[in-house]
Length: 112
Length: 112
DNA sequence: TACTTATTTAACTCAGCAGTTAATTAACCT
DNA sequence: AGGTTAATTAACTGCTGAGTTAAATAAGTA
Image (cartoon, rainbow over all chains, first blue to last red; front, side, top):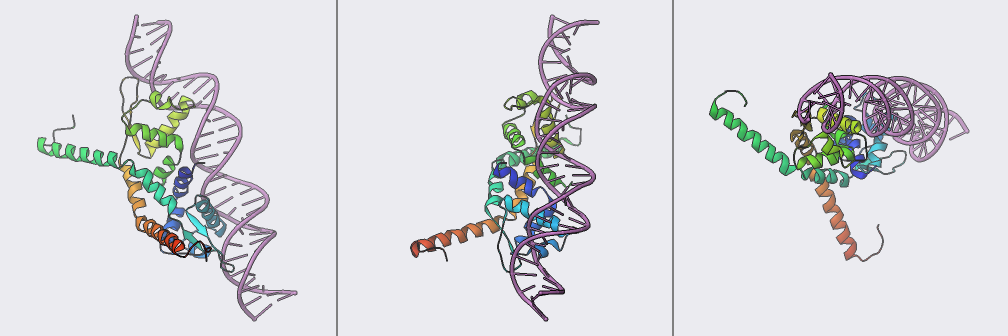
């Protein structure tokens, strides 16, 4: 799978996005990351593996703990990808905006 | 599934991202969208349904054609989501940057 | 050595996705 | 009506993802 696809699919899960959000505040161990979730530890461990394979996190070793750390590069790739469409969505919202203003000028006479 | 998850998982497929890229240039019919791909028409039709359910495209009617149009809102949601991590990755790259400069200052003496 | 804590691996279930071909719907053309 | 084009639906296959429990690995502690 290409890098962008695996990053996006890793992020297409609310649990994993919550983990990312937590890690933005600093390193954390697997147990710490698992605590907020109503889910078994192996399940969280698998989520972490998905994030790791996508390059979104990396893991160190500290005795029996495996502290997880957020990695920046894939997030930047997402930002770069979506940025290519900025013009498009800004244009769309501008058009919606002027459409709404036009409606207001013409009174609420329907949507022809 | 929440909206952000379905948007991200819809985009976690190169075929669908290519369709999005094509639609950024303007409306297109299903056949037009399918042309570049070595894939059956029903397969493309399913991809379009995924994009539609994620709100990334909408479809009109023009005789027997169903022109597809790119929708801006979900793309903006992605941009907004990833934007929250901008500080993080810019900080990371700054740290990497100064690390590399430091290496240069100290000569190539290893990585302690 | 035995016990406890942290984490992963194994083995399994269930659901959903990506793709196929064949059939169906819908609208146009003659 | 009959035929063509556009697109979707149906029915099926194979794979992967998310979750489970139970067992295994790894490292500190008594």
